[in-house]
Image 1 (tube, rainbow, N blue to C red):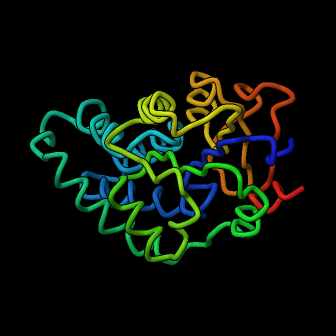
Image 2 (image 1 turned 135 degrees about the horizontal axis):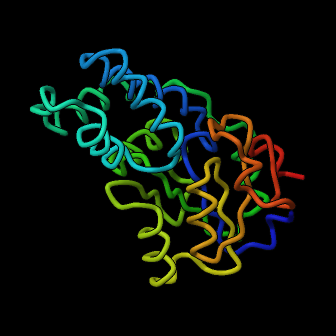
Length: 215
């Protein structure tokens, strides 16, 4: 695994650049808690099983598949607002991956992008406030567009150049990278992904965190 060989490096945010998976999990629980413990735990379980997928899709699932008929009067906007309030402070205070600025220097020739399931506007504000937005010269992208759409769009525009690699921490990250014909590196330290041996091919590069990518 030699990152300097790549023209483009795509990063997921939660669990890769920011230690924020637990922040998001807690926020999903708190948004669903008014509907009961069973509903909240069911949403958390769905969230963890589907790491990397946007909050919009997860709350749509919550409304359509988890809530009973008597509780379905709630709108998705209410859930999204509660979630966003809960997650904001956590994103501003959680740990940033060590070594990221050194890695940027080592791969100065590469185009860096964030492609996340997180809200795009929120991501850009958080990265700016935390002083790391300038590292991602290729852009910071997120929901409501999904990762497959973002990767396809940025490849078509020439913003993602090959050879390229996606550094992620979920099954969806791996699958999206594969569909986009990007190499994949799994970041394990902060991942909430379950049973990775069941879907991550043998031989796929695995790092603990970004500091390990320095070699």
